[in-house]
Length: 299
Image (tube, rainbow, N blue to C red):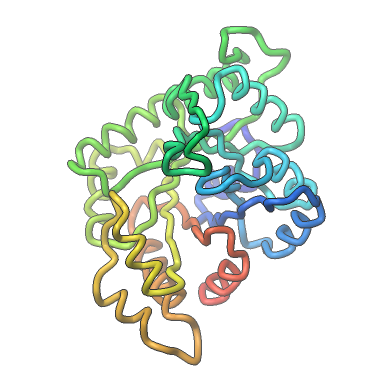
């Protein structure tokens, strides 16, 4: 993987190491000390922390959160959602974030506002996520802004996107991934993996296409806290692999590690053995305590 960015995440991926990323949700308030408390939860074994950007509820600015994490020596990944901002605001955020020491970016189209933070909000969708990847690539490689303007300097960017392994048919998923890679994506984070058989079939298709040689694939996992959460998760469109056996395990009491964390740990072990997987992403829904529990089982 070639990148101009000299971030911890980029260096880990370039060195062939198995990357570890997790996520955090900005506080709903305006107290900056809350971010310092969040930063203290992340150990040096975490390569980067993806900021949750107003996904299901309105919270503090992801850009401000990323800058505060960077100030605490925790490397952030800043999401850029085309749902909420046009190309002027997106370019401004990239340049401002870069000036503040934020170099990792995740390009997203964004959850539709009727399913997201505020159903009354107007969406933008000036770009889609693939177009944003391409535009940011021109910023980094050519020093050209999103409106064709010449920038004063070329920002150092690690450009990320998302991949959807369980999209059917599998050929459509591979086509979408190929478009993002051709546009300039250097790393992709997948949807959460529960169905290992289906994921391994997708990775086989990725390897057949040679895309794993061109982009770093980070497989996401989601620890389930309860049987109720599992039922709600598998009712979502596109979610696959949460079996009745898993739900039953979540219902059984335990005196040790929670069954959700145990299940997630088992999935991680299998993912790490999958050829082409370059790292693991812990989707903990902003629960830093859960992140710590899960990391302790992987030590």
